[in-house]
Image 1 (cartoon, rainbow, N blue to C red):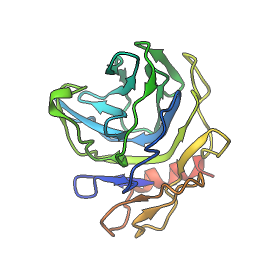
Image 2: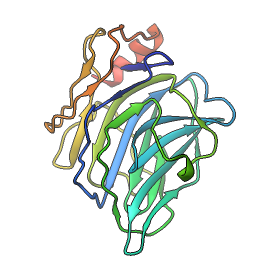
Image 3: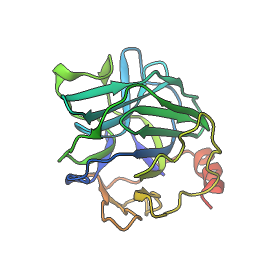
Image 4: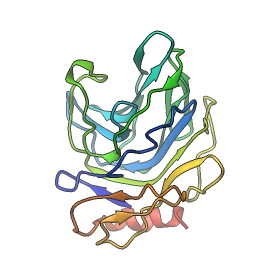
Length: 229
């Protein structure tokens, strides 16, 4: 699993992630664990790309989703209502985008919000954790974006809507690759690794600057290991 804290706060592609694509559909999903939510008026970025989309955890422990899209008139942004996010357990979180925005937790969610066009292009790296840079005049969530604290595992990005219904079956094993997978990270590397391989074959490996081991509580590594078999 990937352990993020104030010192080792994110991993990223280091280069532009699918810079020339204007996706019609996109699903981002991951398993996350945190012991407590971000503080009042704070939020964490789970995964995102500057100028294109972001999946976050807000103060108080809720999930939020945002994306930028392009229609015939102008670039616009969208947000959707937050969903309560449990603490002290692994949860499956999903962000879905189809000229609309949606998200879900543990098999419950859906697509909401506004009609639009295609995703805008972005020539920025993809980041998991950390802080997504943005124009301060174009804030999408209230509060301060602070560094993620907790664990993230099994991150997959797809060019379809994998969970368009209000309820779906929670994945029970490691994410697999199919024709719709455009990025997948298992985070099964050695603890001292500074690179995390993109299993999709598209070559978008993730990097972080530190070489410190990934630490995890015994209860997390043992129980989570059962799911990842």
